[in-house]
Length: 351
Ligand code: NAP
Image 1 (spheres, rainbow, N blue to C red):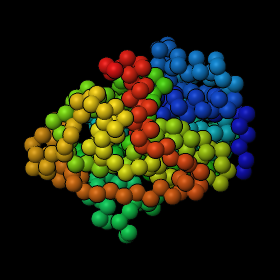
Image 2: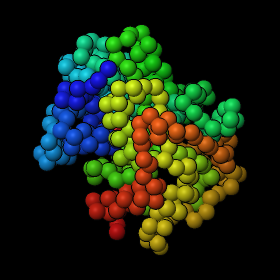
Image 3: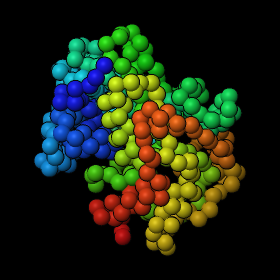
């Protein structure tokens, strides 16, 4: 199987933090991108992509589509050999109705986009943006692994609509994608499973969870200290490259853990401090487990979350992304430094 890169490429959720980087890189390669947005009349959400296309050799075409509307992606998929499905709600706080806000759009959206792939004879490859949270739910799950490391063979079996609902939404959506992919044999499915994504944004949006989290650090939200929570981190530009490599490398298929570094809430603060000494009111210490139970709810962390995550180690195997996609991970210090610089330049934080 070869991919004809001159054919249009459908990218869902074009306005998003990650999708914007994917589309920029595709446009710079001269590709024609059909990018779906929820509301085409809201040009502010995608004007940056129109501007990038104006400077690049590729072409950008905005298309209106909502994850919850069956059939919305069908026409846009016609003639495409590649579909990249990134759109999915990524919210961690303010969740009142997990089913409505997270699970239904993730699951139904995956069905609608992959049904569009089934209806378009031209489609050869679907790249799905999943997450490492489809592999594990809580750090405590590491104990269930054979060698003390998460690999692509594991599935999150501990999240539910009531506990880690975002992780649950990503898990059921990815499982549904595999079910649909395995029921046909025309197109291959390649899944990208990013850890926590940071790095400069192409827009001055604040409402994307990755960006909002970095702003919380810089604005002093965590200055009293942070719980000892470990996680993987990765640069947004590496995630964009992974989608493109997974699409264009004919043999690339299956899941790909994307972890550039193992870090923690305190680790992010330390990297900001190293790059911008004494500039921001950053957390200098971690709070102990008992304190984490007490103040956890302020961070949106339930007692169950604290018990299954605080103070627990995490380890990921990223070798498949290195060997099969050729990813060269950007050092975490550079990611943080360039992310903060972008937020300063865009006036989102006092420099
Ligand atoms: P983002 O900036 O919030 O982008 C999410 C995108 O999904 C937006 O374009 C949004 O469109 C779209 N969307 C949400 N609900 C929709 C609906 N009902 N219909 C159509 N579009 C809808 O977040 P992101 O960080 O770029 O996330 C992109 C993908 O990466 C998601 O699948 C997320 O789960 C995954 N991911 C992210 C991270 C991370 O750390 N950032 C880590 C692992 C995986 P609007 O602009 O209209 O809201």
